[in-house]
Length: 177
Image (cartoon, rainbow, N blue to C red):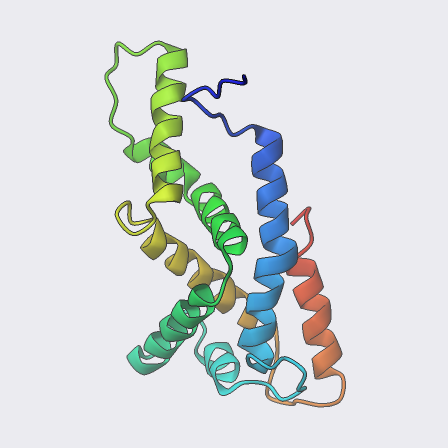
């Protein structure tokens, strides 16, 4: 009989693979929907993408609300694996913030600190609403979408715009990025 330990560790390799999966699959899906809508077969650019491109990070309230609504719907349509990958990515994005904010007993050994901090990160992934990871991840996705939209000059949309958008999506979704 095989006994399973009550402690599970996420290695750097597992974390890297999960974040790479997020970039190659989940982020690509998000960017395609953001640019071209849920039925990404069309070359028509969405109004939301154009609005975010126009305003940048200084989004009017209505546009920001529409962006967060789009993100909420997107996340609701992810399967469990995709959502988990999203949360791993979110923890990676906010890692230093979480490390700085982590409350611990200064008598902890390095091993004990690593265990407790690791538990706090695992809690965030498994309880994203209670731990505020859901909100933090949405904010990080907003940053990505605003940065992504700022990559383009949409004052003139022509036959090359679609290919250009796909090239930038490839760049954003590469594992080395």
